[in-house]
Image (tube, rainbow, N blue to C red; front, side, top):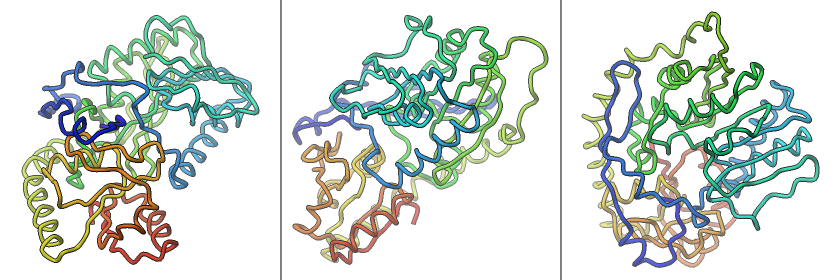
Length: 369
């Protein structure tokens, strides 16, 4: 959903798949049972980075400072699984003069961040058993596990890579699903995310895969779920954290989501129809996966004039499935919008500031508003 598609025709004819979510009543895991990994295409055209946003960069900076301080990541070896364009790994290495090695099939060498202190090596490949002999003091996997279908096999593979190094910490970050269910955020359900976790299901996965769970927490307006874990090498397991006891909450939440989303979809269609009847130009801000899910789930066409994104690498590309044109914020002055629908409300303040700086008085409508 974030491939750079260079023509509207390519975007409109891009392969599609079904989403059929299933919920495990025993562990709380949610997965798309209709998922077919052959439809995914991770390559250099995969444009996932959010590093052009000051809001996101501030979050990454806080997270890096926290990890460096909490785990004394100075002059250490850090391995990142799914490093994207390498921004976060470079930040950790710069901050603690660390050595880093990052794995991602979508890595683009010419966009590697500069690191003045420390050293980073990137491998444009999926992390696998093939690289299991590479030793590290700290393992990171951010916004990757949700793309993996066989999550148990994957986490157990990471556990085998850690081996018996009992003080090696593993840190994962993924989307938090409780919020998606509570807020009826259908735009956060999309094909390449085949696996959905809450604190309980994530904690249970790691315990069953041979880890001790140190902490579970959320950040970025509770959109991201974090887990910190150590390898379990025998003896008593640490007791479950209080936030892992979420099954009694999840069972009614899944029913609430299933029953309520159809009305949310209808409400949005009515809202967009009203904008159209009033001859208001509507644009989306954020040309990533949320926009793909929003546009394709609602079946939108000319109800949305175009899509704006601060990432210059997305300029003049098109949204998969719907074919909407993506452009930069500068285009707002050419075709000023009456309404700007913000795909992620965490960026609303940043976007409002940019609109004001351009003298635009567009109405801002964050999703969930």
